[in-house]
Length: 400
Image (tube, rainbow, N blue to C red; front, side):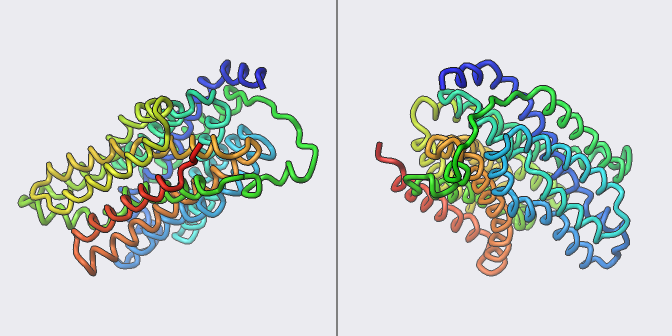
């Protein structure tokens, strides 16, 4: 064990740097098509307005749907055959898939290739597994916070890049450029990441791993719920944000600008706070940070339902992003500290799937509640869920 820790200390910072770069580029590639996806769908032969909207939603969600289904499998294979190998697979697969999307001839190929991108991808979740297991335990929270900042920076930069590049080089070349950048991440992963060799597993029980190896499953279930709530809180207002902003911004020409600022504010706050809260959690305890972040987020959601100006909503979403930034690194760290080494990848894969569930359920629930019960109900309902998640997390924490 001492030799392994020494090896980790020698390589973990370089591994972290490569993983942050690779996660950033792959997330940018997954999200950059947001501004121009309807235009691409129309270019592929869909001309009815309703059909364009429908196919755009299907194409965008397809990647996250397949990624959620396959994340536990890739995590389990990472436990069996190595975390670096899974990162190589994910980066090469994403580079190929993104390039092929730029060569699509019809909307069916677009959706199929988006599904393929989710199936072959998983670089950011694989990076979480590698960083969590190869970083010294006393630095895990900070390292995962840095990785989370890279992921959230990708979510922020992706739509911005997608708004700038297509007018300059065209939609198809934008996808090809994204594939080329991910290929650079593939090369960096292949030649720069160093994973410590693990002892071979000598019996079937050791190879099986998974839930049966976890003595106390309550903390793990609590972390799966927390990951889902994090994404749900971020995504629940997505379908209603433009309509909500239009109600509080009197100048119609500024509605889209303010809506964009509102969407970006939470991501920017999370980028700024993730590594700092992760470092703080390493000192004061990860459960305290998790419960505190959930409670603060629940409190910040309430005034969002009663804002009267756009700047108020932007500021509150930024503060909420600051509080939510500590959740991802703490969730991964708690899982890392509560499961055996041989099962860490599989369980972290389930954690990734739960986050994708939140990404899918959040917009669906927000749109339904906003349409049937009003805009304020979305914020207040999400607040109740976050507070309930905090209470459940506190009850589920290990007593030792």
